[in-house]
Length: 242
Image (cartoon, rainbow, N blue to C red; front, side, top):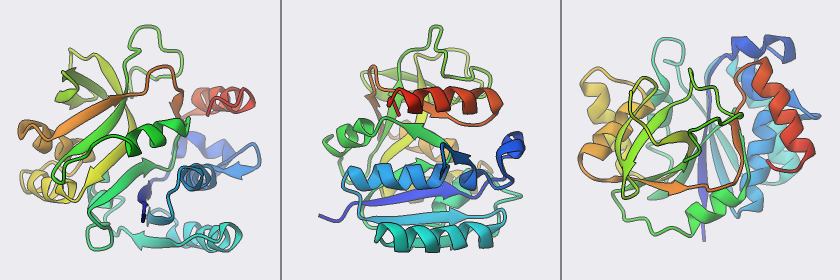
């Protein structure tokens, strides 16, 4: 069975500058963040990767050449020429012409316990739906930057509301999605209204009752976005939790 993943790796990551100028290429315990993501995917049975590049794309492409050879896995890079002026929804949409009906959507700076992917892969997914892995630990979660995290309010595992600034929420967006091609149509609809973010596309699906969640339970994940979360990720790696 062909399992594909789309990885967003277009951002700059200025808050991790002391560890490297290009965020996907920042090394954590001698491996780049994006290598760790791809290796996790391979262990979960993903056998084809699409990487959306942007900032210093030539450096990311060179690294993908290296990983393609080292890991003996298909990796295609796709350049988003709007990366600096538009939100991440435009990066996801760049995958429209390359991906089949079902795929995983991952962030190059979010590390996680790979069992989350396995659980998503075992979840029933109807052709016009999307499933988002969510963390329901919203009280004193030491791995989450509450100010920067995308929050989600759900009812019966359906996404009702999503965004960084929503007032009522009962889980966090982990940045790990199991998608159908319906996401691309939703992004186009959202962009048409002026919202070019990935969250905007999920909101479109939510209004159509097509956006659902999977509870990661006690499994770990972390968005490595600054020095504090970088150090936490080092500790989680040492404990083999991500």
